[in-house]
Length: 482
Ligand code: NAI
Ligand code: MG
Image (tube, rainbow, N blue to C red; front, side, top):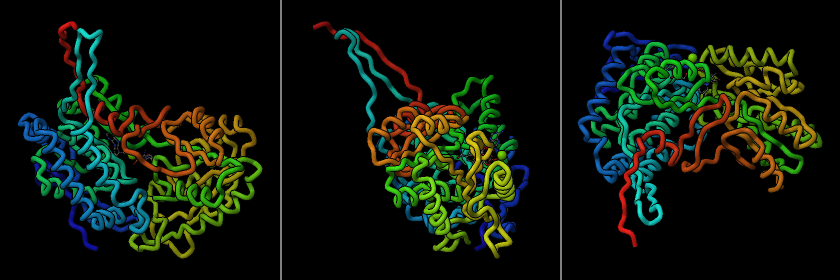
């Protein structure tokens, strides 16, 4: 597959960097250069922010009727559905996601746009009539130009999760995708142009974090930053924007605990828990990577879990039968393998732990299961972001909760039990932003997505996205007394 060089999308057109610089896009399967991408810097960022800010001031989008915004976004969503095979292939090429094993199904990216197309038009504002003599109501207005910084692990879907609401509410955006995944997002520029989004409302600058991301978040005409990635980068961004008092929304990954109680529906549990850590080669912020199993069923669970892990066929992401592709990059491969080596001293590698036999090229890691590590061990505490599960036994609910909550992170929690009482009890006490009972990653886009502790700051989804991406104001006036 030959792929055209990736370019910035600024003011409605694809552009090279002003400096003429590019960087290589490396295939995680062949470890070879696939194509190049424009290498953005402070000058490209300035051009993109100007295009965005000029478009916002012109008002063709920021002051457009909600019904018009809905029509444009609905058309863009239809085009995403139509072009999904192409988007899917570009993602497989740039970051190794298997085309046959989509994490949320192809429709999720389109759903992100459709959902916010409707939300911005249909959701009501608040109104109150205090003591029947003061009527007040709120208004949600677009704010200006937002910086959106996205990661490589679900490049297209996570971008639309930010772009959808930011644009739907009438803002302009400058999006900086990860340097590891600059290809699939190019399709979106074409889609928005065809859907009739006014030029300048949506812009993409490609490039590295320090060279393009940092000047973008620091730009004085950028009024807020929505970021998904690592806590270290979030801290860096927070420090950069602090002097300008910008709003930020951070989604930062985790080390999410999965409770497997003795009364769980075991076949369904084992298959779904495996999907929760092996999907996308474990490169999911909400991956269920710490699996806490009640002692009575510990051996039974492990036996079934090892057998299940063998069904995660490792291979070329372009082949429909592949469930587990490579991890994204050499750096990520070294990081994951480093944790597996650590597990050999902190605990024991029960299954997997190497490259699949015969696959000498590509950043492939077998589905790996670690046991016998103390809950305080680094492999139980740190986000590995690879197909690596750590399994820990527990006896009482309270002991399990103590282990689950002994974490810097708090993104997702998973509970497998047939007892509603147990599920509610544990859900109320797990220190995480999201809790899934007897399922994995089922979404209702009205609910707040985000984490507690170092897993994030702020929530996105439904009205929470509206709050972040708009300026909420109120109007008050006296009413005639009855
Ligand atoms: P990262 O946090 O460095 O990169 C995420 C995005 O931030 C990329 O677009 C990057 O270019 C940008 N960026 C980096 N430095 C920046 C800066 N100073 N200013 C503005 N933007 C900047 O994550 P990385 O290095 O790709 O992955 C490292 C680890 O982070 C992973 O192993 C994983 O543990 C975690 N991670 C978590 C994700 C999640 O879904 N929460 C997604 C990606 C990574
Ligand atoms: Mg980095």
